Image 1 (cartoon, rainbow over the protein chains, first blue to last red):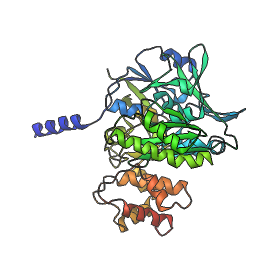
Image 2: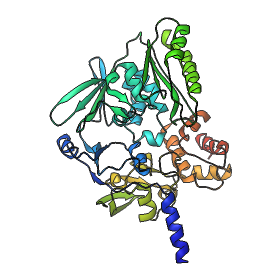
Image 3: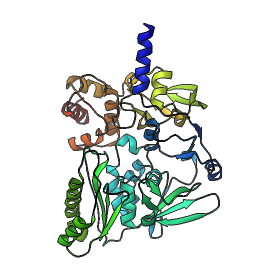
Image 4: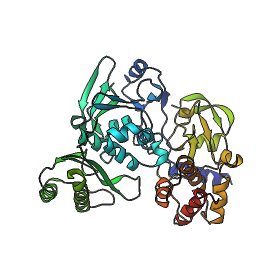
Length: 278
Length: 157
């Protein structure tokens, strides 16, 4: 019996996805957070909806998680002049429910229902998604299409980075060690602006096969490269399709051939075209 | 090295204090430490929805939250929400419409469905499908689940 129980336990251990051991700290102030982030093996924990799965799969083994959800000043959505400032800790669910975002940043409002599922949108954050820079994520493409500005702080200074310069590659951003993304500023849409967000996924809320965040002549594709891929299409749909076919080189994923992705990107472009040029 | 932290939270209306390793997921804390095994561990990386529980009134993935993050929170599980009869209309409709077979997904499915019922006026079948899109069921093909939720939405539950 003991042997059977041991065999059962080891089977459970093999099959289970459990995170490695780490320490946990929940700072109450930015200053305290920056002190903790001096540790090169510390990782920032916000909503945790991407970090915790990667810990469960042991793709990441940090020494310390710095839970920033108790920090003041990172949670608001506010109209500031010609932009909407969204704190890094604002959740997808809060973005979804925000009338200000519906009114002033319609592209983001259209994108947010595509971000995972309700239970995940309740915890996942804007800052977490932008700082992770998953190439299949919705917000990075929206930020690039809208020319959003990301606000980054370290212990002593604050700097502002254009979205197009923030995303450097696969899960790679302009964030330096010891820095924290604290907010993103999205320009308020003018009456004449046309925005549309489209995405194709195997199941609603799953990772995008291909997605498109389009704002006027700026078309930012997601899921087709190591970061959002931006095109400017002005003239005709035919010319845009030709350019896309010649210049977009999507890598295949587990389920879709590169040619499939390229074709689907063209489908989204065509669907978006009439909305953005109307 | 294991790092332990003290947490105090309210689970199904009862105050609970424990020391937990930082890496312990909320779902494992509920199932193993508190023996509330109604919520299930499925994929353990946020895909299947079997571990759905409620934290401070919002549904979350129990496998994507650490127990230490629930410090100070109010957690409700299928056990508490069954005892309070909050889920009774949905449970009755699931039963009547054969909206479960093996039942593994059911606790999570009920919490996701109740979340929609609480936060939406009169969702369409399409909206019901979207809202439960994060919860896998490998038995029913979903049709009966949508039927059951729709029944409660229409006030016939």
